Length: 209
Image 1 (tube, rainbow, N blue to C red):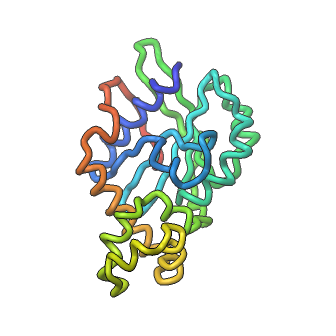
Image 2 (cartoon, one colour):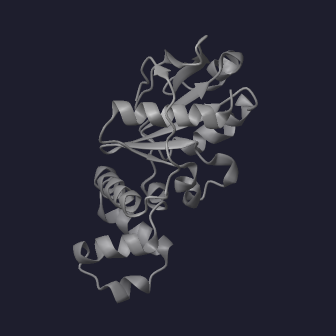
């Protein structure tokens, strides 16, 4: 199977199961400063939960997870690894207990089947400064200027890093997650080309959030 096939099947299943959830492409978290090698394959917002899905297909090296997971755990509430049977043993050896594991297979009809191998748990390591990096500076200023009782012109005088440090001190992690989720949803709704169209694929079984 190809990674794009699995990604499309996953996106369709998430849309079917979570009507109010929002799916984001891997580039969303690129601006969080993790580097090109640590871009999550699929980022899903369900309420205030940030769920990361990383795909390890037949052509991927599961050993990359050793460097990726410590970075992902600072961004997401939950992290789920999707893998093919040929990589399952290696993935199970590498990932920590809090990571969900889903085995992806195709049946004789070509339908995707998602078998939950390990249930995901709340990680509890999110870094508020890191998750704030996904917002644009303009988004931060437009939303927080009134709340912080600061003019937009004054806020534009600060660097984005300075603004993020200020917000991390003023607000709780949960408050920031709510704001970030709402702003990313607004961004998605305003930009219909933000994600690729989802193709219809025959799916069976359920995916654990």
